[in-house]
Image 1 (spheres, helix red, strand yellow):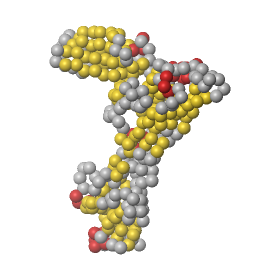
Image 2 (cartoon, rainbow, N blue to C red):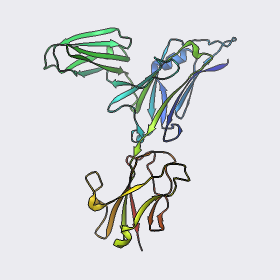
Image 3 (cartoon, rainbow, N blue to C red):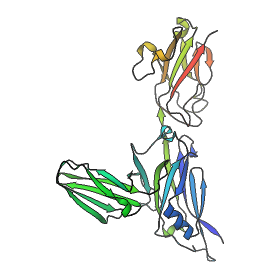
Image 4 (tube, rainbow, N blue to C red):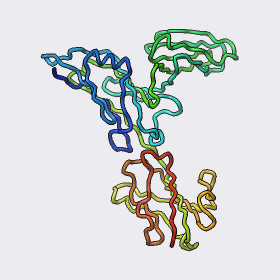
Length: 332
């Protein structure tokens, strides 16, 4: 039996400048059953998924999935992924990517709220009366209720009776409306960061599309707190940070501003926590934000006049929560 490619889904990240090994793609339980019934082979790789379908003797699919919807979970194996990444949506909303507009590409992420099978929906509009309508993802009305009192600020929904899937709940009053997209899945991975729903088109057979989701790296202000011991006031005043690697790495030069500990604000680490009475503290912060990279800026140097004290300072990595670094230097 021969197989041909049905589609590719690739996840890339600025930090890695390519496929993101922090991410995995997992088909939902229903999708797994669908793929199994069609004898689809699934190949996973760091930051990617490929599907292959069986062909008959004429090169046609033995079991066509045209018109079927595949639901895929994007999960992360890096607990610090949110610190590394500028996520497409804020707070607790889950990004949903679909090919419902252009079958060959993913539309921008839609905001989706994960909810349990039974939950109290918080009413958003203040005006009463209002109408609350629950629709399925195709717009078919499932429930409709009227809320007439200001005291009722929630409405109980039992989605488990309708099954897993996407729902839309809409509030309508004389002054306006509010809509929220919901998803109920009985089993949601705890490390889920996005969902992908793909509608299989007949054209995929023989002309497999490649779908891409790209994640932008977090931009940081680099903060280097230098704790200097046994340096005279004159020597301490001549400590400086310099970028000696920008030309070698073909990137923009990173310039730093010096902030004396007497000018620290609440946004800075308390200088009293960094030194004892015999040492001095100064902060150097980058004048522009720096995008995180696996191979970040090299040769950010701590210098004293023409002397290089530290040839290459650390930069935020894959698991760094902040971009604050504490550098201790001591003169013998």
